[in-house]
Amino acid sequence: MSSLNLDDFTDLIERPDGGVRRDAEAHREGRIVPPGSLGRLDDLGEWLAAAQSAVPVRPIERPRVVLFAGDHGIAGLGVSARAAGSATGLVREVLEGGRPVSVLARRLGVPVRVVDMALDCDPESLPEDVVRHRVRRGSGRIDIEDALSAQEAEAAFRAGMAVADEEADSGTDLVVLGDVSVGGTTAAGVLVAALCGTDASVVTGRGGLAIDDLAWMRKCAAIRDALRRARPVLGDQLQLLATVGGADLTAMTGFLLQAAVRKLPVVLDGVVTAACALVAQRVAFRAPDWWLAAHDSGEPGQAKALDRMALEPLLSHGVTVGEATGGLMALPLVQAAAALAAELPAKPEASEEPGEPGEPEEQAAEEPGGLAKPE
Ligand SMILES: O=C(O)c1ccc[n+]([C@@H]2O[C@H](COP(=O)([O-])O)[C@@H](O)[C@H]2O)c1
Ligand SMILES: Cc1cc2nc[nH]c2cc1C
Image 1 (cartoon, protein in one colour):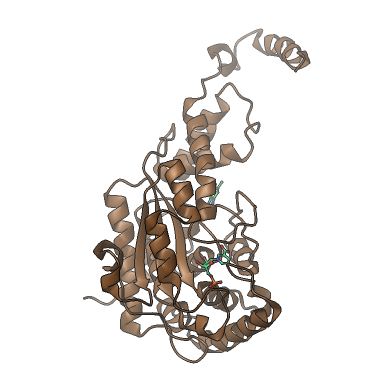
Image 2: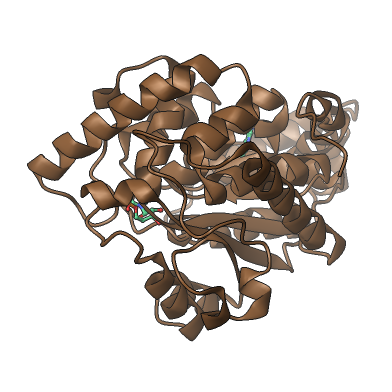
């Protein structure tokens, strides 16, 4: 295997086409509904058009949820409301259709793909297509040891890239990315604090099922200790992920970068995907142009990371369950934006030709009448 050079992503990742974006804006200006009256749906439609390099934008017809799963040794310190090693149970429930992500995905008709990177269970106990990318059983306890060896980190990163390639090759037109990751918000907090140069307390949230004050203090201390181990390797993102990220977060970072190479737009979910996106931005500064922040989960580390990437979350409903649930909530909005951008009729010919004599007066005469109509 040739060694992985993350610097290559800087050149491989292009921006979505600016010319197409301007065409999409011009197309929008020619529609019957006044510019601005669809609010953020206009921006969303234009962003998608640029990502697809298509005006009018194509409908999102083959979206997919991709969940990276893993257990984190740090959960053994009591930093999560869930028991250490319990991510497997969640994954089973996802596969059986009983988790929030399963319910929303079913309703929206979106397939869910789960990728086990480091669950703490016997790999034989899960379907082969779920476990085939696994690099180890549980990631290391990041306050005192590396989450992964260098080899495991490279394998996990490549697995994430391979999943992005598989999705792009199979015609997926939008990915909603999420994690099933017990202890993952602690690792995410370390990555965000390390990359933003902040203190542990600034990024320490309450996790999936809100933890109590004592657990919060343990989480804060764990992030502080892991941060000490992260700072010396900040300049090397793959080593940073090996030191404090863990297998699922490393794979998600590889996924995000390769998806951007393949021009596959990705909807981000909560703090864990935001932390991976932040690492990926360090690798390739243009990459965030391919991502949409679905929602604000309320985790301080997520807000910090999104702010750094100038990504503004679409929704805010306090959804902290992870597993791409918040991402899926945004999907109907993305689909609505695409449909409006593509299907609204054009303004009548006359109003598109400003040079026509008499035309401005006609408009002026028409508009107040239209506005004056009772609701
Ligand atoms: O989306 C968020 O910001 C968010 C905040 C807290 C927890 N979660 C999810 O909850 C799961 C457990 O996280 P943890 O770190 O509390 O064990 C994990 O899959 C996270 O994605 C997600
Ligand atoms: C408007 C818009 C701008 C963005 N920039 C990066 N991701 C984005 C997503 C949207 C929707």
